[in-house]
Image (cartoon, rainbow, N blue to C red; front, side, top):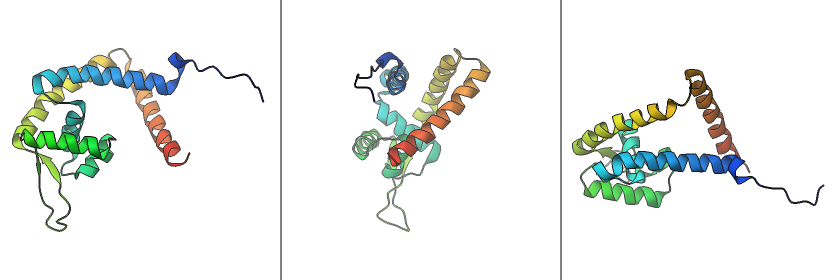
Length: 153
């Protein structure tokens, strides 16, 4: 075994590259909805999850958007204060409080979605249709494998 230290070329290190790319994309998207709609990244992710999968509990939202409970709770609280999200009581399990978008929240969601999809299309414009399919397949595989590694180090 070599005693020489291995060099970590940060600019080529996959976790670093994915993190920087995700941050850059997230910031660009945030610019689309932060000013006009006054939402944080977490608030928009909560709204996007509820827009697609509601009703969800706060825990379910956290699992869907891969965020910790405190961040989700804070985002939900802010969204509820603005009248964008509402909490209901599950008739079968009173401890369960599913969340959903209000009419005002749904209207805002429906304004932001086309902006987000337009940004995605502009980002994808750098790739051919075949490259997009390949990237999506590779991302799916990396995502699944990263989850495996996290659960079984």
